[in-house]
Length: 176
Image (cartoon, rainbow, N blue to C red; front, side):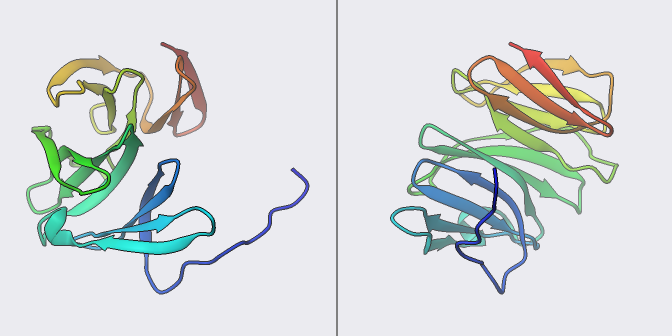
């Protein structure tokens, strides 16, 4: 890469997490009662729609992370008043909820829960306080929990068989 070219700047909103489909960029706002701003990517990057908080979360909640996969978006939503998290799967075109799973894990640390899509339409949620990887099935049920030796930050799939996990001091690659 020889140069980075700025093609557009999005202003006047504080953003927190993002995910992409082949045609859209989804950005969550960094505030209580988060909303999601959708931008069309082609032929140029243009604002398309704002999904208001009433479609997504309650006034005392915010979106911690999100991940797109096959026409759906998984949202990890935090409720700071009771220090809990849930994951919701929504249709990426209508934002109709497909399922919701309360994680029943109290988050006492400063680290945020994160998620990524897995091959086969399942989801992986990072529990940083308990140093666990939580497998959520494509139907929204809790699958296996896997302990992790290091403090976790984020996880992303590369291709269909490599999972990258960021920790405090490094990135670990795992074959699935």
